[in-house]
Amino acid sequence: MESQASLMEVEGGNFGCSHYMRKCKLKAPCCDEIFSCRHCHNESKNSIDIDAVLRHDLPRHEVKKVICSLCETEQDVQQNCINCGVCMGKYFCEKCKFFDDDVSKNQYHCDQCGICRTGGQENFFHCDKCGCCYSKVIKDTHVCVERAMHHDCPICSEFLFDTLKDLTILPCGHTMHMDCLKEMEQHHRYSCPVCSKSVCDLSDVWRKLDHEVEVTPMPQSYRNKMVWILCNDCEKISRVQFHIVGHKCENCNCYNTRQIRGAPSSEFTSSASEEDCN
Image (tube, rainbow, N blue to C red; front, side):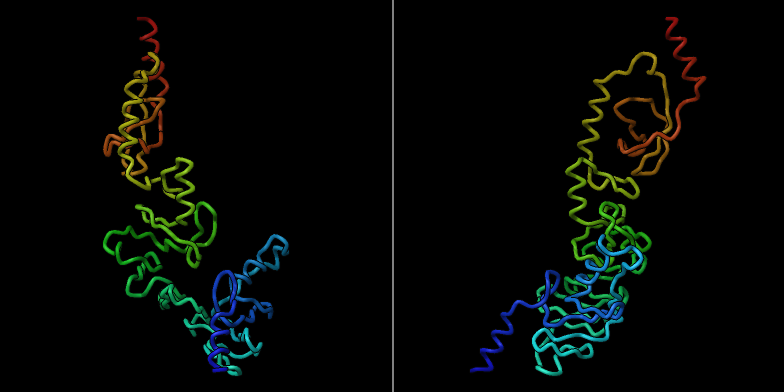
């Protein structure tokens, strides 16, 4: 009975940190200091209070020693404490030196990624070109982008490959934090920060712009002005009439375009002069 009560106390204890539930701490091989997890280390060692020259991340695969949170015994990396026998993490990955008591995340190790992922291995596939695990739901439809996850979020600049935040894959194949995308949309920005392609179906917006163009006549001197545009969505080049509201792609009928060249100055000057004479 006493051992069962002790076990219940251990199971119900408050162990770990804000990032992970676990019953051990890591001895950082880079600075020999003790931290609850690598994220705690990185937050501490990369803060603005630390000299920029001394800032660094914990190399997760190089961890050699852990300290049991119950009996404080320092030992080689393993799942159960060599002294008190407690399980230091219900999920344990020897390759990543990773412990976590919250197995509801359905953690699994991906050899191609080289790290542990969450969500259940049966639900994900590894894309060799993108260099990351994606949901099987998009296996046949996602757009491959070389090492798509191996860069910073274009909004908050946090490295995406091993972030703890939810990610989203845009129709163009680029990736970013889900929260960053939502914040971007709250500011009425609906194009990818990397390639400028639309991040969702904007057909209704294009129809409203059609109406705006129709009810907004340009001054007489601009009605014959033509410009060259590049469509960010279909990547086609068109020569269209200049309008202050926007320029519609002749290929896909969207307004997600940019002006790349105006009409020759002589062409515009000539037409304006003729109309001034009428």
